[in-house]
Length: 133
Image 1: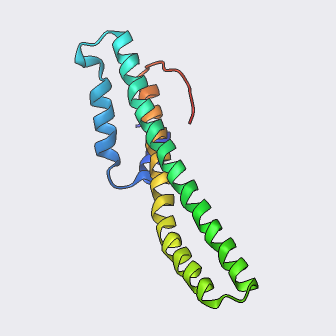
Image 2: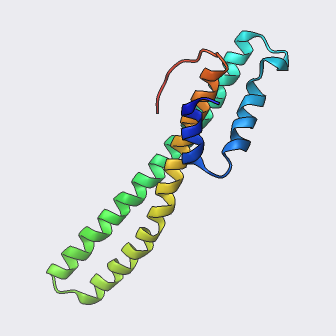
């Protein structure tokens, strides 16, 4: 296993070995595929990882935007002296803020999965198009 895969494995933690074996099995040259089929399968696998990363990034950005919106609303309500409205927005902000760590972790995991997938594909000697998220 390459140093890069070892580094990604450390970042991914639990589930790395199963993910690695799954990708390698799908793209193995022993599966009686032509090089073109292997390349298409590798591109599809990588596209799936990129799509998951993009979805995680959008969910995180939406949550961050929502948190910023509630901060802004709470500040406006505070400036207007509407204490009950401030509390309502602060409660909503706390609910949204509680989701952020999980979404951040999900996004980081998706990035590592995409990088791992790309590294495995490169290690198998399969050429793919290098389209990034």
